[in-house]
Length: 312
Ligand code: HMG
Ligand code: MG
Image 1 (cartoon, rainbow, N blue to C red):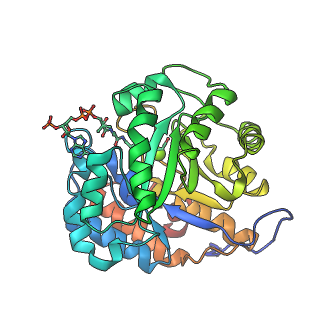
Image 2: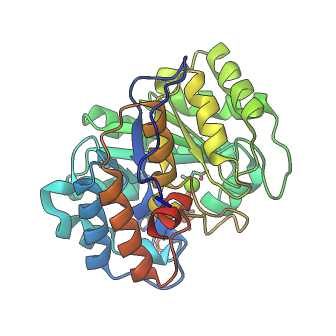
Image 3: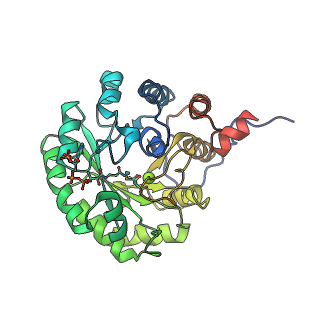
């Protein structure tokens, strides 16, 4: 028996020709790891991801150490990475002006702010209401844009919230619009706890479109808690989205939402895109090697189904 190492290419109508994979492994992937990963391992992880062909890699977060101890080495990581750490394709998470100052000091030119569709998660993750968090982000976005930086806005809990349950689509669109009105370049809609399903994704994309936020500005960020991330991604691609967040090895989670588990695994996404004949620029073999290496560093097997199949 021969295990296939690549899928057969069978395109599907209505899909984009090219997809940008926005790799969140070093940030979302690691932020929830209990044992601190040494900073030189993080730097190697980023270098290996870049060498595998990932163009956009979110590196870390400029949040207070006490909020996310795992990413308390943001400055050190960027120093280690040197010139590879800057540019439009190396975003970092920034919650407030203090975080922006720290990021700008390191030459960062791409940032991501991160809001919440629900009040409970805004309180838990940002220690303030939705309205106060928009007020916190406003000067951050203005200063970043004035300085020529690229700005992404994440919105979490777009498909459900572990404390509040279902979240109305109008409520999600309202928060997305408030953040995009600040002038952000891209919106990433987050299924933080992985409960969404494809029809829900299409309804939200339609509602955002009606509100003037179109698919060329939208990225999808699906956690895979309920095994829906790849199906939801395919639905979004069919509706015109062409930026997909994923995490090598399916690492990920949010320390402030316990029911959030790993992100869509980058390798599983790459396999699906390869099968559809969609360009993405990533070398699957190199990515699988990176994932296997990172799994060894973390002391547990990769959660990616593709990595497991190819390593069998
Ligand atoms: P706070 O405690 O309310 O902040 O936190 P504060 O303004 O009251 O400041 C408290 C102390 O922190 C002060 O120091 C500040 O100077 C300092 P002190 O005077 O006590 O010595 N401080 C800072 N230090 C370093 N860097 C900073 C900074 N800001 C303040 N940037 C805050 C408010 C927003 C900062 C906090 O709630 C926070 O950092 N939250 C972020 C938590 C987080 O990172 N969560 C995970 C990322 S979100 C996610 O994963 C979801 C996503 O993947 C999408 C999805 O899946 O849905 C993006
Ligand atoms: Mg996330």
